Image (cartoon, rainbow, N blue to C red; front, side):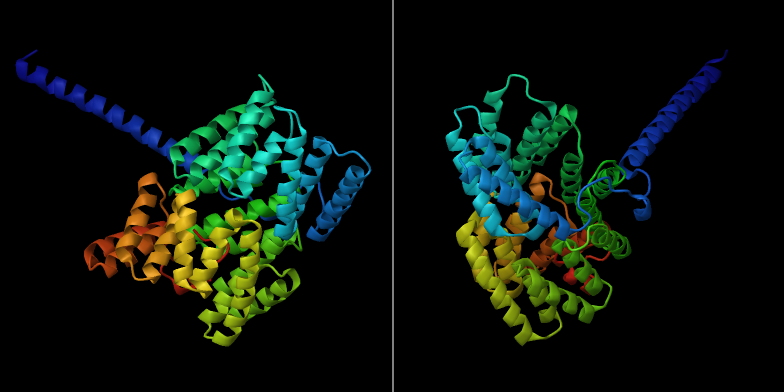
Amino acid sequence: MKSGEKSGVGRWLVLLLMAILVVAAVGYGVQRWRDHQGPPDPVPSEIKPWFGPRTAAEAISGTDIQIDGARERIANGQKDWLHLEILGDTLVARYRLTGSYADLAEADKVLDEAIALAEFPAGPSLSRAALSNTLHKWPGVESALVRFDAQKAKPDVDELSTALALRGDMAMQRGDYTAAREAYARAGQAANNAGLALRQSMLALRTGEIALARRRVNAVLRGKRLTRQAISGTALQRATVAYAEGDWATAGVWVAYADRVFPGHWLAEAFAAQQQAVEGHTDEAVRRYTALANRTQLPEVMDALAHILRLQGKGTESRMWADKAGALWAERMKLLPEAAIAHAVEHELAVGDPRRALVLAREDASRRPYGATLSLLARAQLLTGDPAGALASIEKAESGGWNSAMLSMQKAEALDALGQDGKAESVRKAALAINPKAADPTARFIWFGHD
C-alpha cells in the first residue's frame, strides 16, 4: 500500500472513530433527556387515591376526635412522652388541614414537654425535628436529630430516610443545594417515598431543572396507596411546576383536580381562585377569595385578595383586607416568628410597607440564606431604592445555584436601575427562556406556588 493510501485509510479510521463517539454521545444525551423529561403527565381521571377521608371536612373531624381522645388520655394520667407525641403529631396534622398557627404553637409546646419527660436518648426525636423544621427553628432540628442518631445503632429504614430528608431541608434553606441533593439521595437509598420525591422535585424546580421537577412529581402522581389529601397536595405541586414554566393551561388542569379530589381544603380552593385570575376571570377570583377569606380567616388568603384588588385599582377594598391580614400576621409573628416571617415579608411587599419588609427580610435571609429569602430581600431592596444591594442579594442566590425566572426578572430590574441596559436585556431573555410568561401581566396574579 502506498503512503498516500495509508494516510487516507488512517483518516477514514479516525473519522469512523469520531462518528462512533458522536453517536454514543448523542445516544447518552438523548437518554439523559428522556430521564429528565420522562413520560407525559398522567391523566387525572386515571389516578385512584387508595384510602383516607374523602373531604377536608371529614379529615378535620377525624383529627378533632383524635385530639380530644389524646387530651383525655393525658388528663386521665397517661402523661408520658408517647401520648404527648401522639397529641403533638395530630395537632400538626390538623394544622395541615386548616392552616391554624394555634395548633402549631400548641404542638411545639407539647413536643417540648414530651422531650423533657423522656430519658435521653429516648423520646419523639423525629417528630420534634420535623416540627422544628416546619417552624424554621434550626437549633431544634439539629438537637432532635442528634438525639435520634443516639437512639439506635441501626434505625428503621423509613426513620433513617426521614432524618436524612430533614438534613436535606436544612441544607437547602442554608443555600447549600449540593448538600441538599446528597442528603435527599441518601434518604432515597434508605427508603424512597412520595414526600422525598416532592422535596427533590421542588429542589430541582428552584435550581432550574424544570423537566426533572416535572418528572419527579409525575412519578408521585402515578404512585399507589396515597390518600386523597396527599394526591391533592401533589397535584398542587404539579401546578406549581406548570406556573414556573408559564404553562397556565396545565396548571389549571391540576388545580381543578386538586380541588375536586379532596374538596374543601383551603389551599386547593385558594389555588382555584388564583387560577380564575390567571385565566382572566378576575371578578370571579375576587368572589372566591372573599368567600374563602371570610370562612377561614387566614391571612394568606387575605393577602392574595388584597393584592388582586390593588391590581384592579380598588384601593379602599384592598386596604381593608390588607389591614386585616396585617393584624393577623402580627399575631403570628408573636406566636411563631421564625415560621411567619417570610409570609409577613410578602405581605409588606405586596400590600404593606416595603421599609418594614426590608427589616424583616434581612432578618430572615440572615437565618435562611437561600434563593427564596434572598429573592424577597432583593425585592425589598429594589422597592426601597437600593438596586446595588438587590443585585448583590440576587447574585448571592445565584452563586448557590438558585435559578428561577422571577429571580432573573428582578436581576434585570436591578441592572436597569443601575444603567446596565445591555446586561439587563440579556438576563431578561434568560428569564423568558425559563418561563415565556415571566413578563406577562397575568403572572402578577400568581400568589400561591410562585417561584
